[in-house]
Image 1 (cartoon, rainbow, N blue to C red):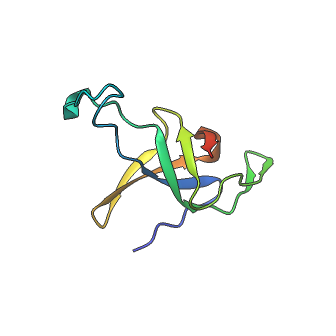
Image 2: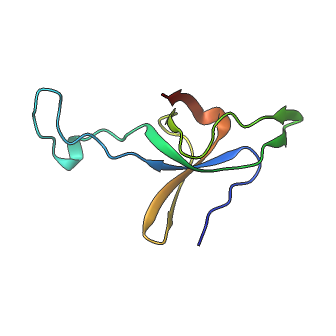
Length: 94
């Protein structure tokens, strides 16, 4: 099964949370902060959203930082994804 986003939506797959700090301390699952970085899996076509033309700025494979509480979590074929609007993406990580 494949997710195909509509309009200005993007399908993201979260990158794994850090399990150790920079100093080498191992963090238990509850102490790990929800990651805000993800990889773009699929991109909608853009188009007119709320009366304005939207051009998609991200592409499949980009690593992005998104708003902390943005999007809708979806579980499909045992994988977890987040579907967000393009304006919830804050930056592309190069």
